[in-house]
Image (cartoon, rainbow, N blue to C red; front, top):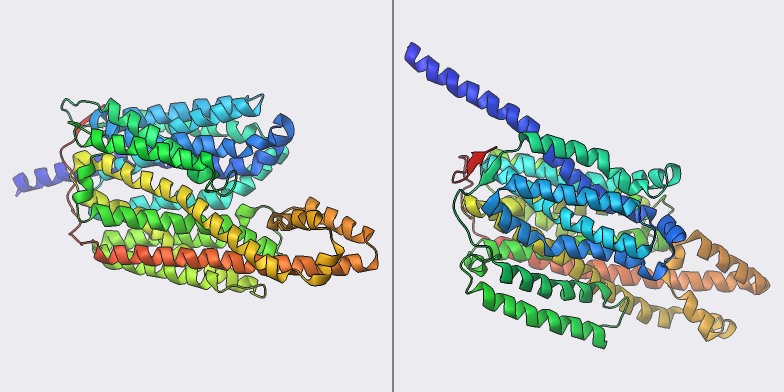
Amino acid sequence: METQTIPAREETSRAVQQRHRLALILPGLLLGMLLAALDQTIVGTAMPRVIAELQGLEHYAWVFTAYMLTSTVTVPLYGKLSDIYGRRTFFLFGMVVFLLGSALSGTAQSMTQLILFRALQGLGGGALFPIAIAIVGDLFPPAERGKWQGLFAAVFGFSAIVGPSLGGWITDHLGWRWVFYVNMPIGLLALLTTGLTMPKLASGRQHRIDYLGAALLVAGVTPMLLAFSWAGTEYPWGSARIVGLFAASAVFLALFVFAELRAPEPILDLRLFKNRIFTPTLLAAFLIAIGMFGTILYLPLFVQAVLGRTATNSGAVLTPMMLGFVFSSILGGQILARTGRYKLLAIGTVAVAVVGMFLLSRMTTTTTSAEVVRNMIVLGLGIGTTMSLFTIIVQNAFPPERLGEVTSALTFFRSIGGTVGAAILGTVMTNRFNDELATRIPAEVRAAIPPDRLAALQNPQIFMSPEAMSQLQQQAAAMGPQGQQLLQLLLGAIRESLAVAIDHVFLAGMIILLLALLLTIVIPEIPLRRHRPGGATIAH
């Protein structure tokens, strides 16, 4: 009897030690995730002050584009390298580079410097999300990952809720430079925690690094991201610059495919796409990202421009959706951990997202605030679970030594989806808005206002700017008694046109999510492993 009790006690002791170790590792990972997620929402709030001090309004978009480019193109590289040399090395490296970029961004004396330092920040930020998720995959079997990865996904929803208000407070009370400096104490705490507690998970065998594949991937993805970022806004879709960028991207990506098919250990193994689970899951996540980012871009515009609701900042408008996102992320993770089955959960949550997008597409100028909140919550409930769920589905389909590669591939395609979605849905909105407005402007408005001035007023962004609205009121007053009446007719036409245009964006988003739902239905279900992954050696 005693001989049976001693091993049982030793097993219990090991389990307790493992829980204590995880209790130290996970907070560091969550802090690292929070660091990267908060940065994006906080920086956006501070940009008007940054432009006022550093000038360079024409370079405004590059502050975000530079970060997006470097953080996206490095994701597959970090994933593959962390499989080879260990997660800790590259997670800590990414965090150090991110913090260095943050500190330098706070000292920027020009927009050019800020853009360069943001690019450096992105080089580090690209490591934080995929490697943190891969580490959870190293530490827990697939059946238990849901409750933890759901918590990680909830961090993004939380940052979207808190970030804009926090960024506004920091900018108003401490100055815009502290928007970057505030990363330092959080990052140093995360760095210390993960550096002391995280094991070095490595494969323990020799590898060859695919330098050519890495270079061709960066060369192919960078012009593609730039083309989608600029098309329809900075330049027309058919302009020589956009077409040239797409052509360059196609050439380098074709060379990348050619090189990867012959590489002994490719950065992104194209044979992954032969897997019956990997390909539909990746495509579904890509499509969901398109729908989600399109919604995030145009919901604030609808609420503030069409419905005339005021908000401290556009990020605050999305709070109901993000609350649904956070709740769904946590609840979905718990359900997955308890049932060990993912297919019905995946189908159900994507179907809820389709319903949410359909409800958004039915909104008009008379929609109430309660209806908008309901629609946003429904969409958030649908999208929230998919962030962690699809990651677990892909991870479960491959051996542990490929966790970093497949996790980063999923993150990479989600990032591409967000960029593509912003470009395509933005074009849908702009074209529909112009068509609608051309037919809705009353004849008396056209007769009273010169064509050049009328064209300048046909910008929905005026509803988002109190200064622009104040100028319009002054111009209307200068036109005499009929000025206010003409202004109200014009603003009414713009609101109605914008409502129809954004509804078409949401309708397009619903169709995209329907395609994602069809892909989710064909994803095969295999039992989630309930044993801890092996194959990796743990060394400090």
